[in-house]
Image (cartoon, rainbow, N blue to C red; front, side):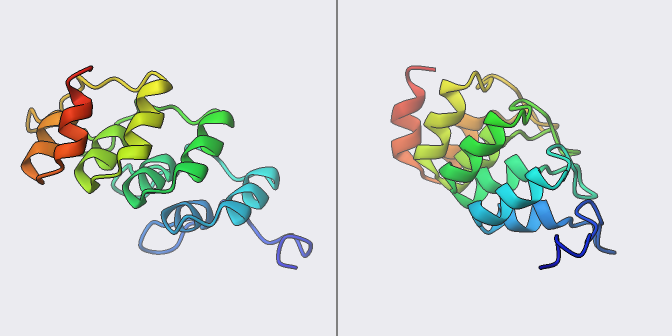
Length: 137
C-alpha cells in the first residue's frame, strides 16, 4: 500500500537507515524485492558505509544476499572501517553466506583498516567451520 501511494523508497532515517537496509538486515526477502523493483538503490549506505549486502551477510540471510548480488550489488565494497560483506558474514559465523560470497568472487584477502582479514575475524570469533572452509581460500 505504501508503494502504491508513492512512498519514497530511498529515504534515510536520522540515524542513517533506509528501508532497503532495514529489510536486508532482517532478512525480509519479499520486502527487499518490492523495494528494489520500486527503485531502491542497491548500494545505499548507512552513515558508516554499510550496505544492504553487508547487513544481509552479517545477519545470515543467504536468499537476500543472493538476490542483491543478482541485482548488481558489489561484493567487495568496503565500509568506513574497511570491512566487506565477506568479513561481516565471517565475523558472524554465517557459513552458507560465506560460501555464497566466495562463489561470487568475494575477495578473501581484503584487510580492514586494522589489517584483519575475513579468515582472521572468523578465527577470533571461534567459527571453526568457516576456518576449515577457509583452507581452500
